[in-house]
Length: 282
Image 1 (cartoon, rainbow, N blue to C red):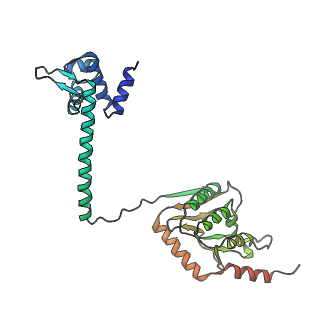
Image 2: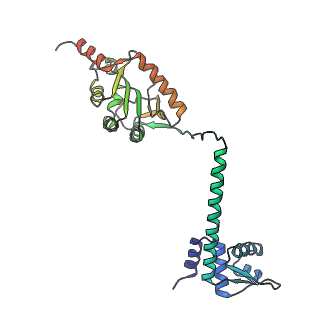
């Protein structure tokens, strides 16, 4: 057997407000009433009852008497629901007409483009940087460009993410440090990560004596800009400060910076060959 709460919940799902559902159920159960006893039974004010009754009358679910004081009667459920359905259908038809009118008016207007709302955030550790980078890589469609120390290229799954991008036809261009100063303690040139990128079809270049921004840009919208911290440190909890943004203007600035650096750089393969020739024989 359905409870009052179940019945009112179904009425609410049908489009009534909670107050409308409770008042209509009360009238169904206890018969016609004037506003005063309704307000007392439902623990509310007469003004509130009047507003709810007016709404139910408009929906065709309550009928007022012509007597004074006015007595309000619940319309039988089948008729009330049918009336509510017809009212909603009428409102939908009216909305459809308004929609067509607005679409027609819109054609006559000259609306400016909707500006995108940009988001900026600071990434504070290497773990978050890697996770955000991989997430951004998965949504890249056309091109990604970057300027990073070589050690960053081999960070935690980076090459696998870029392999997937290359397989999807995304253009990959990067400028990396492949000089011995990237590994000052050993003197070993860290060229393996660069070679891995070259092997997947990425276009990697080398720029001598570069000490500027380290950054990446995807589809000229999503960008990372290293503010401080050693992103080449291989500890996931290493503190860093990296600005992440999905702002086209800022990404455009970084992309323009990349293009300038690109014209000043040389192919990484050429630099790697020079370093191999300079390496002393064992």
